[in-house]
Amino acid sequence: MRRVVCPGSFDPVTNGHLDIIGRTSRLYDEVVVAVLINVEKKSLFTVDERIATLEAVTREYGNVRVEKFYGLLVDFCKQQGIPAIVKGLRAVSDFDYELQMAQLNYRMSGVETLFMSTNPEYSFLSSSRLKEIARYGGDVSGLVPDLVREMLVERLRG
Image (cartoon, rainbow, N blue to C red; front, side):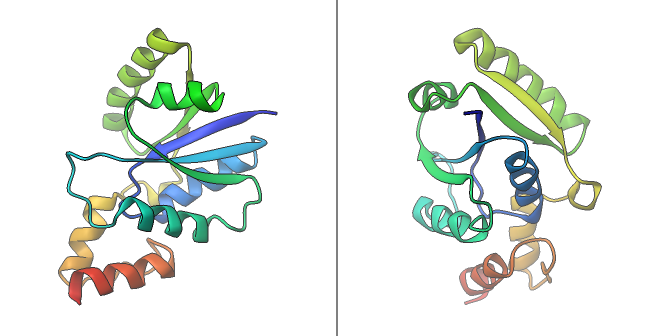
């Protein structure tokens, strides 16, 4: 069975994330979406909210499983028996950072990192930008799943 992990904080999940997850699910037998627990980062949504949201919006893919992890991604990969990480790249700046992480991860554990270019339709998306748009009343329709849009409106505008 060919398994891979798509990691991130997913605070919140965007259509760009889902594009990468969906495309990856067509290439691998199982895709584990790994939600990072980062105690040093102030998140808008709890880890459990992010997991529930991801489970709901990836339900159509029969081979996607959502898990949380804390610590090093390569340790999570070893514990789960996952030999590769898939990362979406939006721009050259993403590549510069992700290449260094990929090399370090490989050096530490032998876990491979595969890069997938983001669909140009979503190349400008980031969770932090979406939160800012929603916070000031901007419309994020088409950039996030409807469920996420509703959650953003409720959380940020009350």
